[in-house]
Picture 1: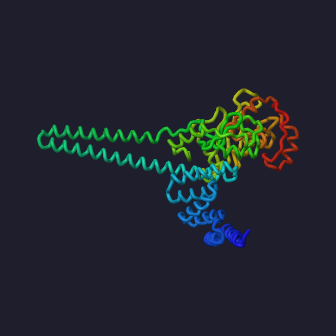
Picture 2 (picture 1 turned 135 degrees about the horizontal axis):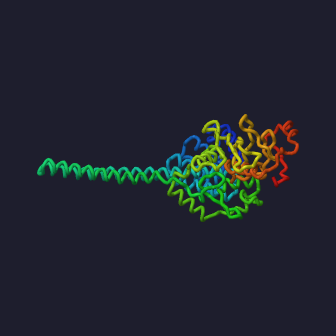
Picture 3 (picture 1 turned 120 degrees about the vertical axis):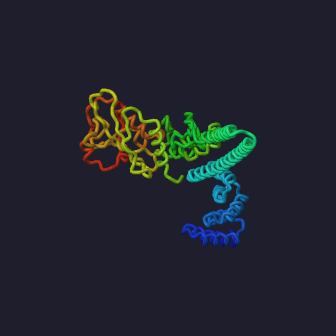
Length: 278
Length: 160
């Protein structure tokens, strides 16, 4: 290692010491100095990205994550922290994309200890994304309702004015009554459409992981043909080494992704975002 | 999201019980100190047929769920109270400790639930006709200081 490289590594270690003591400002400074010595030190960018995330310098943190990903596109923590920053900035779509990349990197690298963390973050992103979509949809629906009611109200007003000019007292009353009935009908239509949003909050059994009772995100299948969430079955297999249903010996390598079920779960969650924390 | 695995899972088991009810002869008495701590449940069970050993009796089970539940099994024991005796069974010690393979770390499966464990214990009683305690009961009850999950039972007799 060159002198510069050795100095950079020492500075990075100093940064890590500060980081462990949660002194993020001091850690960030060390990592920056390390990068002056060695501008290609991927780990220093990744570490500084974490500091900057905790210091809520989200844009700067994302820049560091990008510097890491330019050198190593499968760097788990860079995807993870990029996603966390994006989520903090309210960019739910891109946050979801990088949360998924982090989770997939985790699975591909067999980094089981990070499986829970990355999966839960992915869930948070997806939930957040659905909430945003849902809020927008409801907002648009309410605006549309107000607009339609306004159109109808103006029309009724016109009819009433016309009747007031030419017609009798009885005619005017009839026009008023007809108008109120039409308004009530229209309100009823919107009311019923809204009610549909709140019913049928049920998750089909076959999308549910029998270990956590959550909707599955990444179902994997055992040789006996049953599917479980990757994180929960991995945990059990590491502990017990058996299939939870048949009690036959089972190891991690026996677990195969169940892609069709994964698509079904993902389709269901896209339509029913409330099920993320159901 | 950051809550332990057991909290959410137990919440869901409870929700299911409140929605669908429990099978005949099983009743939930309480489900923990508070909503925040639902790790300690009490359930009453009865034997449904006319088995003279258990006729007209109600037994109380205590479930203690570890944080890693359902990856790890719950600790399940019978509780002795004036109106809730400890049932007579060759696998039930007189201090309420139950020797059942599915509750041991070897026999446990995370697809089991509080409800399915109750049903297994219920059927373990139903099918028994021996009016006796496990061998060495007196000695075991006197000496045992460990918690049920730390005891190494020998599941050598699967006929009862």
